[in-house]
Length: 393
Image: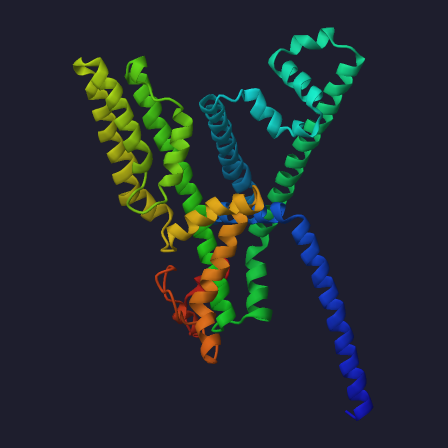
């Protein structure tokens, strides 16, 4: 190759690099614009993947297995979550004294209307018969509010539909994506492959294990609290049972504490009420304490958490991610910040030490070995037989 050919070759590569970087900037812009949809789709994928792997053992086609998993597992779970959240909002409205219609107005984005329009719409939510006596201007206000609410609902449905579509294609094609990544980007035995494996493994724990654990604990707590309300006298009934059950599920991620931060104050409150009534009333809070200790403390720590969560990623860090994410980014922060924390933690474990010391990048875990399922050094054995080292388990 002479000098002129080298110049042309180098210029051609520079032009292509500039073009690829421009495309990358475009992809980054699209991802930023629809980040909520993308992180929700990734969440659905990791939440459904263990189930899809089981379904694939009985179904030959990956697409059918992915569709059955989403229809038979993810959608029912999503409906349960929606019900629990709405019931929790109802309890919050009762506890705070804000009418339920006020919360509904917030959810439907009615705050964008003027004050008189908001008052009229909230009046209609409380008493729809008022529409019969409304004049044309008032009806126009209702139509404006309805269009605003319809736009919000349609936006939610579109985001959910696209997220389900993304998770479907990931479930169907994850093996091919993992094979392409190993062949073209990070071959087995490289630090990139070990990092991708670790991130993939921990995201399954975060999005499947921890979220499923919170959901199971919330349902279990709801059964305990509603069972107590069914047996106990009305004066000793548990107020806001769904909200307390949801809080019990969330606090179950705290090591050792589990649900104590919720059910212990609850039992103390009921014991105080029972002490004023005298007689055998004290047996009810004592019984609730025993059942809660067994069902919401011993059972999750002994059986549920090791089986569902499995890995050793620091639950305290993840709890901060779940709480701070929505505060920082909005609703999708619940999924985005845990994902970002996993990327950071695994980078610290695998590559940061080698970069700081100027050493050759290796797949070995050099820092924070407890923040992961296992040492990834065996991924450096190219002759190893661990097929699970792919980025898709």
